[in-house]
Amino acid sequence: MKIISWNVNGLRSLAKNDYWQTFLKEAKPDIFCLQETKANPEQLPDELREVAEFSSFFSSCQVRKGYSGVALYTKVEPWKVIYGMGIKEFDEEGRIIGAEYEDFWLLNAYFPNGGRGPERLDYKMRFYDAFLAFTEKLRKEKPVIFCGDVNVAHEEIDLARPKENEENTGFLPQERAWADEVINAGYIDSFRHLHPTLAGAYTYWDTITRARDRNVGWRLDYFFIAQEYMGRIKKAEIHPEIFGSDHCPISITVS
Image (cartoon, rainbow, N blue to C red; front, top):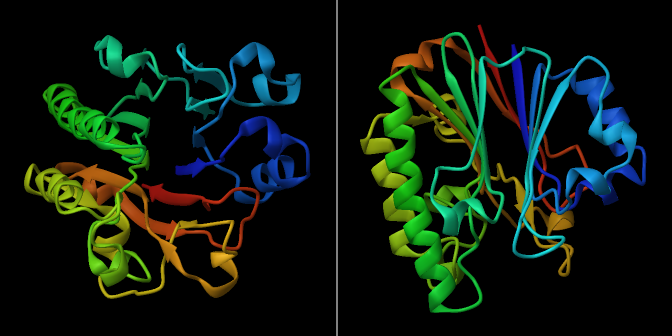
């Protein structure tokens, strides 16, 4: 089984060119998790709302149009689909879709960006804490895989210019400390586990400065795997050759 995660930075814009159909045809995902869709389902064209061979599920932001949002396309029919964590202030931004499968839970999440001032950073940190508690609750039933744009570069190896960004959101000590908490709770950063010393492996690049041309990037997108399930993970990959967003897709292969 191949699971792909991608912050598409606007699903409708992705559909205006050939990226969408070409990517699906070549990547052949069994489960496809999207973040930052920026659209309600009724705003999407038919080819995005109903994709052949996939069941599709959407969660959109209820408080701001064209903002946030996640989508799940799956060939494997879930036992159950959940939207959010049951906490209004977080759920109304449409940041989480969860799907229960036979032997694991999959959470597709778009974590908040900590920019726009201290209030938003506080929101992000509270979201982080609530999310980890929520995953641990689900984990009592079966192992959890969570993926998406986590909006933090965990270690210095995970961004091109760590020293210059020590005081910038996405690489703040408290954000990185939360990633430590995730790992201490028994979740494995699948890509780093399988590629422990690989530098220059990023998933996001600033478009204004054309940072992708120089590979001045950040690894903000992850598949975290409950350690009791990690033995089933055969591959964890980043796909920088795929364009269409300021992020690139990431994937895992599950036996």
